[in-house]
Length: 149
Image (cartoon, rainbow, N blue to C red; front, side):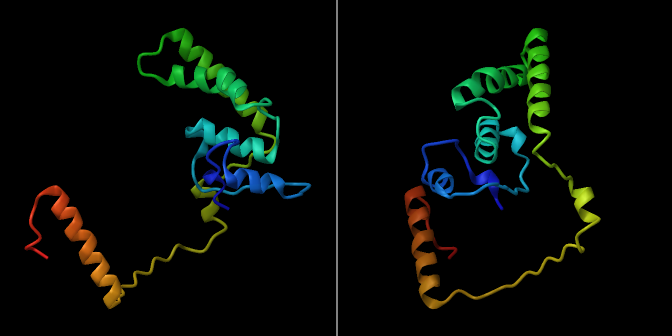
């Protein structure tokens, strides 16, 4: 769960540790719309299906990310938008076989109603002291007084 926290395809301890785990299959779950951050999208796809989007992040960026982001710019030319749409469609085609997307509306049919519970807890004396110290530091740094506290 929280698969979107795989921020990059390589170079961090989380990815290295997870890749070291022997597994025949890998599954990631996330409630975050990951297609909006293409580097994270690549990292997740490459983790569960290595090589599906190219063998390195630079080729993915060149083929998909850069054209899609360029076409999304409000000042993009018609050609850039057309290329972006084509690359986005190609990306969706490449990943639809192993990415299962569910909207909140679909999930609501299978989940109980959401229940929010607010619990108010007093700070312990040491927590309250620490909180006051931090707030005073912020006010001092800002050059304002803490008389309201």
